[in-house]
Length: 96
Image (cartoon, rainbow, N blue to C red; front, side, top):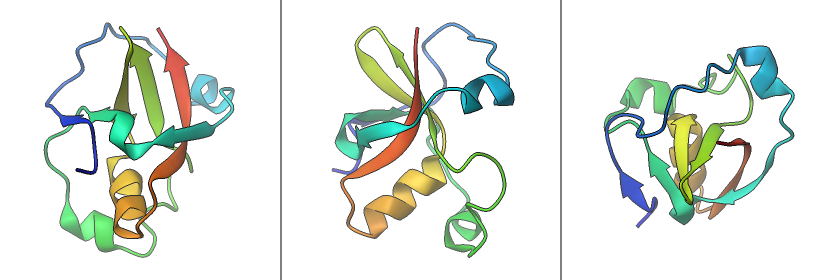
């Protein structure tokens, strides 16, 4: 199993973080098997595109809430890491 769980939607309250505020959080290693996704579907063409990680933040955004790690942004990056047989990624983790 790649992720701990796959769900649709965010169970945690809105955090209101801006892109700049996310950028202020230093990335840290996170195991893929500890992540719960907040999206059930992804666009395969985005996953396979060579520039799919070019735009936006280089690091996925993870929200730690009630003892769980929710992958809010960066599903394509995380799945690409899994396809490369990596077991962890560096992500920005916001603790709520």
